[in-house]
Length: 146
Image (cartoon, rainbow, N blue to C red; front, top):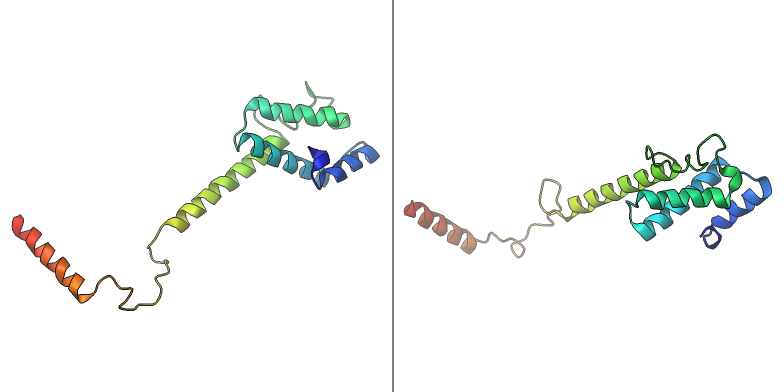
């Protein structure tokens, strides 16, 4: 996947040259992988999917594995506590997606003090004199029934 993405070639070249990645390149790689993950599996991928991506990183870039951890990929995703670079990025993406939904929901609502009502003209006004009279007559009729 990294080979096909625009920034992926830079990541591959840097690793081939230095057997490591700078923090900026690692962040770019995680962003690209999470974008692919969310594209394929949605914004809440399973634990297994996240673990497979973490294993894939350390198999493609063996020097990025953590020799002090049990499997070596835990700093990319640790299933025990849900931490790691991939998990953190996913949480950020999920937060952005939920805020985006809130924004579109707020924008779809009409009315309120900040709603754009446009210029007042009799043509676009629903409360013309005849409609007002009809509404008053209806209210009087309803009050008599009580």
